Image 1 (cartoon, rainbow, N blue to C red):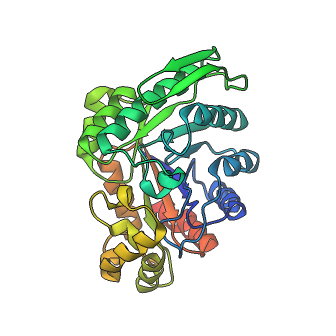
Image 2: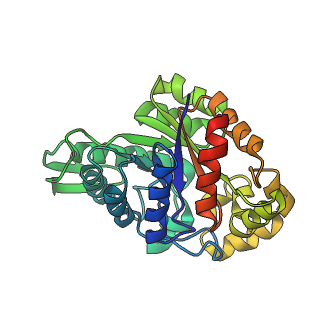
Length: 316
């Protein structure tokens, strides 16, 4: 059996709403939390983007569920030495129940300081060095590092968890999955693709945890759910590398005019019927994931948690 968690969307909700959703998730029987880490939402309709580290601090007091960032980019907007300190503090706050999910990021969030946006291979190289820097700092020793991408001088973390923070690496293609297998303590994705999980495991991941998240929109009818999902998350259906390359929410809105409501309706469970939700969970489980995280699109959160706990969970 896979472990089922809830995916908190920082793009769609403010900090207090996210904390309330975490409470509801725990009450509904969800076992863990994912939380996105963005500077911008994907589009203006989503309308939020709180600083994730502040929210995690609040979550640590509001719930006992373990938390994973899905995912943090520790390479451009934030130096890995700063992310190392943030993650160490979060792990102390969560009493060890914190995992740092990392990835190569999106221009949407990372370009804001005015630097160039590196190519995908360079971003993976930067990510690998960033993980090296963070792990060195989590030892509690004084760290001086002069690498290709990062310099650290006489840095030492004094507030640290008893054990180093686990680092799970995100991947959406085979090369990144191989890197995740080589350097990660676990794997993150949003694709029910067994070849990605296999690539991770055969490249050094072995039996380490593999996480995946997906979105749903419980609503009175499937049509109403599809309409809400289309209004808020059409960007989920954009192809290829657009999600990594477009720099502003306005660009995502322009690109999303190519997405239809029918495309969104066919891509995720919507409405009141239990079976599409069960089928989606099974699809990810059969792809080899150990942990799944479900995000309810839209404002109707309380009824979703009631629906999941009383109808979907018993059917799994």
